[in-house]
Amino acid sequence: MIIDIAPAPALYPYYQQENDTVIVVDIFRATTTMCHMLHNGAAAIIPVAEIDEAKRYKAEGYLVGAERHTRKCDFADCGNSPFDYTPERVERKEVVFTTTNGTRAIRQGENARQLLIGSFSNIGALAEHCMEHADRIVILCAGWNNRINLEDMLFGGAFLERLTASGTVTIGSDAVRVAQLMWQEAKSDPLTFLKGSDHYARLIENGAEGDAVYCLSSDTLSVVPQYNRTDKKIRASR
Amino acid sequence: MIIDIAPAPALYPYYQQENDTVIVVDIFRATTTMCHMLHNGAAAIIPVAEIDEAKRYKAEGYLVGAERHTRKCDFADCGNSPFDYTPERVERKEVVFTTTNGTRAIRQGENARQLLIGSFSNIGALAEHCMEHADRIVILCAGWNNRINLEDMLFGGAFLERLTASGTVTIGSDAVRVAQLMWQEAKSDPLTFLKGSDHYARLIENGAEGDAVYCLSSDTLSVVPQYNRTDKKIRASR
Image 1 (cartoon, chains in turn cyan, blue):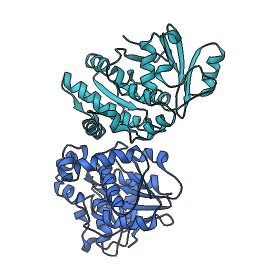
Image 2 (image 1 turned 45 degrees about the vertical axis):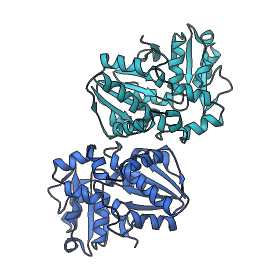
Image 3 (image 1 turned 135 degrees about the vertical axis):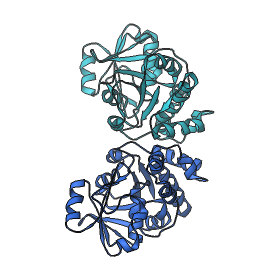
Image 4 (image 1 turned 180 degrees about the horizontal axis):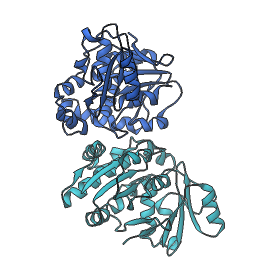
């Protein structure tokens, strides 16, 4: 098993190989929220890149989640907080979802053999799934407008630790070594480690400290969201 | 004073701002070697991207340094080792130079207000120059084929420490926080820290361990190489 990390979407072309299993992560908050939606019973997620596309879906009666620059868009039903997506709201529904960075990362990785959605909430379930179904994993960090961020890299280090606990893992490149070092430093208290980060400051400004705590909690969900290239929807693979 | 780090050339567009002072680093070995050339008396360095261009200069009688994938190109006078560029060889000459990653990074940053060449060897001189002549600094890491590497990021952390010792410095983004953490971990023994890295392994394979030691030695030179946008040459600014 080989693991590599693309620290930002624009770098993925330099990390990709055939037969990759790509795990898109946007820890604060898009991919954590997507895991939460499917856990709460959403039938599927339809990721869309543009606000206009999300508005068209909204006009057709879809439940729409939309965020730009850490804030819920006015026209949308929900924003980017996992707590927006209660079972009552999402059960058996297809949720249209667009966020600042998460959607871009999914577009970048959509031609991978297998594209999964990762977060600390489903990290254990993901590791188990990958040990069974993956040869080479690339963690595709959503970052922030193609700048690298601490929280997505940190997930890479945590995921490496999980895989290593279950078998022999080969480190694909220096990006993984960076993430490993970060996780060693952060794992006793990830929230404190991230308090100086760019994104944490943005969450606090927007009153979303509770979201940050949730987004850093490991193994709260057992869902493994998988992107389907044919219909471009994300569903729980288990 | 603001400092930021673009972890790979392809990410520079997402970090750049007007009036940046860009410091290109390719610690193993291109920018270390360039500092060494100018220190040893070269009149200028002409960085070129393509092998064919370097060959044309060679045919015109220029001294040419060319490396691809850690090895000296057959047609060239010198490779990418600093020790190739003795005073006897380079004094008062213009050296044409092309390397796998370093030249690409220079191209990426060439429209910056000020483009400097950095390495551990001239880190102190650079910091002094920047305290006087820069408002916002972006360390542009050459990386390896647009993948991030440990040694270039590490320089970013070391440079932050130098600037902080001389004044108030604002961290531009999470990339700087990553580099800071790496430097904290590595600074007591950078060579050992880097022994697991991708590039160190390539240097050893090519018998260049001595180069690695030199490339990690701080404050051995006082030269500050600066790129001139008009004639596209690099000269010692002091």
